[in-house]
Image (cartoon, rainbow, N blue to C red; front, side, top):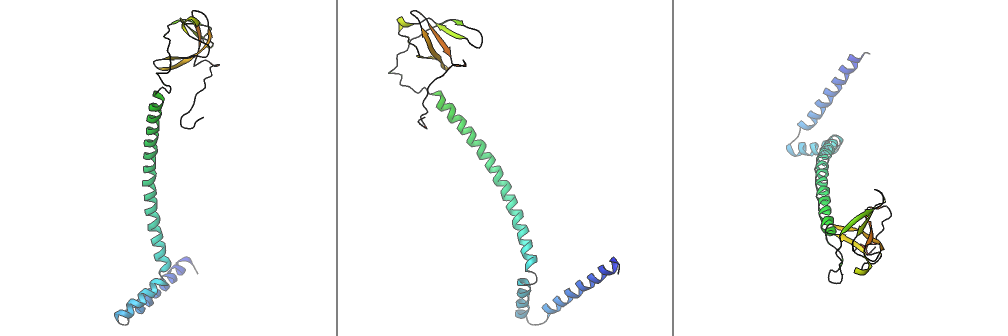
Length: 175
């Protein structure tokens, strides 16, 4: 048998099957036809209808998943922006009591060392109340700390120096 004969035979079987199903559903009163239709729906056509429902459900779930991914992306961006704003706000505050602290205003009078080992020389020293390990601030934040204090001047190790170390306390974690 060749392929055309097999295809023709399959078409005849399919036509015969449809004819039997049609006759099966045609005879009887309306209640019998409804009962037979429900029987065919629960038995013969169940795999087909189940598959169609599953495909429809999968398509709807894919669309919902795409929408949720977009929403998650928007929320992540919004959350990141809010964290950035919160960090900027939190970092802009100085975390010590101003009333309990004495400030000594000083001017930079020079620099010492090469580019990477540079230190700052200020015009205040031991006579003005400056001592070793005092923090040095500017209006923008921490500049460094005093590493040597002489009578009339001090040497400040800047914050961007490789040997700079500063103890800090994180209010949130207590570390």
